Image 1 (cartoon, rainbow, N blue to C red):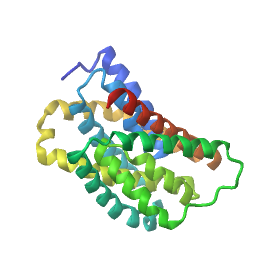
Image 2 (cartoon, rainbow, N blue to C red; image 1 turned 90 degrees about the vertical axis):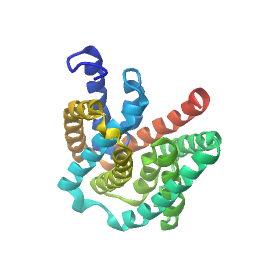
Image 3 (tube, rainbow, N blue to C red; image 1 turned 120 degrees about the horizontal axis):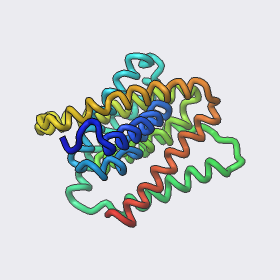
Image 4 (spheres, helix red, strand yellow; image 1 turned 120 degrees about the vertical axis):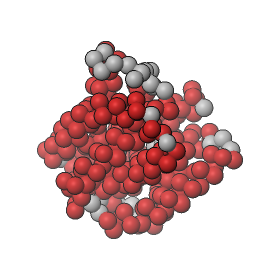
Length: 250
């Protein structure tokens, strides 16, 4: 393994994942956004992506077993086919061009959207059902390009679904489906034949279990207004991360 089980590096990664899955347990997305920058200091990206995909999928499945009946399948049945189409478009973009400008534009849009949400005094009206098309397609595109489209679905669903628990489990269901696709691809490619990946995922699993348990219970106790503020903060951080990627990574 890249590092032992009882080392300072492992402790740092464990605490990071605990916080990442606390957020995931509350919002239904955001674990990779929080965990990847820290894990990248100790593990290669080629290991981080399949490890987090495996843990995300497990977290989504556990939450579906507990709360799956609360998911809004009327929304899901429209989003998933469009998500798949978006993923295919994203894969084509990745093969034929550098998607730098898309990162910049989406980052600016996301930050502008959240700041408007925070400071606008207008009464918010739910998004039109027709907006499922652009949000789902863009979410699929960015999932294929960068492995992170969850915050885009959250922007749409947080406007469409009033109940915070229903939103949370619907979001997790979408992330679970998206992650299942990635895990299947990694499985077919033989990535999980690397025993270190499986051992590290297993070692990090308690952090995920504690995090999603705590996140779920926090969500049950806070108001919808406080919950939406948390969702928007995670979305805002996602937008800032996109700008960072554009100016310092790409």
